[in-house]
Length: 248
Image 1 (cartoon, rainbow, N blue to C red):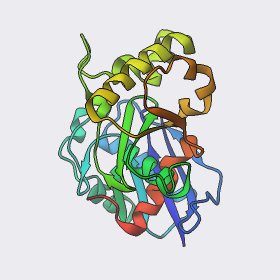
Image 2 (image 1 turned 45 degrees about the vertical axis):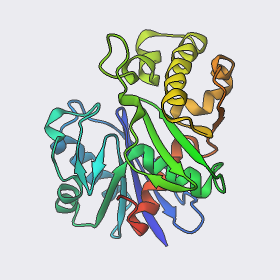
Image 3 (image 1 turned 90 degrees about the vertical axis):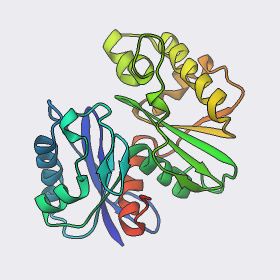
C-alpha cells in the first residue's frame, strides 16, 4: 500500500509517498520551511500544500514535534503556544478532507528504525534520539513503542529544557564545532543513561548523518549507533502509523 508520510520539524515540514510493506520511500521528499510563527493556521496550510503536491487522496500519517495523545497536542515544545490542547488530527482532517493519524515525531522515527532500519530485531530497551531543532526521543521495549518519551524536556542548569542547550539548533545558533557540540550532546546522553538505563541508543535526525564527526565525544557506556534511515525515518514511520494507528 502507498501511504503519505509527513514529518513536521522546527525548521522544515517534509513529505513523501512510502511503501507500507517495505518501508521504502517511493518519491523524493518534498520540503517546505516551517512558517514563523509556528501557529496552527500557518502550519496546517503548509501541510495541506504538501498533500496537494502529491495529489494524494488516502490516509496520511504525520509526525509532530511534541507530545501527542489521541491526536491532541499536550505540550507546545518549540511550537507556538496556541497549539496547546488542539486536536491536531481534527484540524488537519478538516483542512484536507483526509484521514490523519498524528503521533510524536520521535516516535515515528523510532517506529521506522525499529521495523525497517538498524533497530529491526533489537530486543531490550532501545531509545531513539532525533537530533534537530530539539531533541526528540522514542522508546521501545522489546520492539514495542512506549509513546511520548520526551527526554529532551529534562531541565538543565539555567535552561528550562536541555534541548535548548544540546540540540542541533544550538550548534548552528552558536556556531559550535562538532567537537564542542558533541561534548554537550554527550552530557545529554549521560542523563539519558542515568535516568532510563537503555540497552541501545539509536541516533536519528539531520545530525545523525554526521555521526563520524562527533562520535569521539560520546563517552557513555551504552552502545550508541546512527540510524541508517537518518532524517527520512520520520516520514517513513509516520506513513506506516497511518495504517496501523500507532498512537496510543
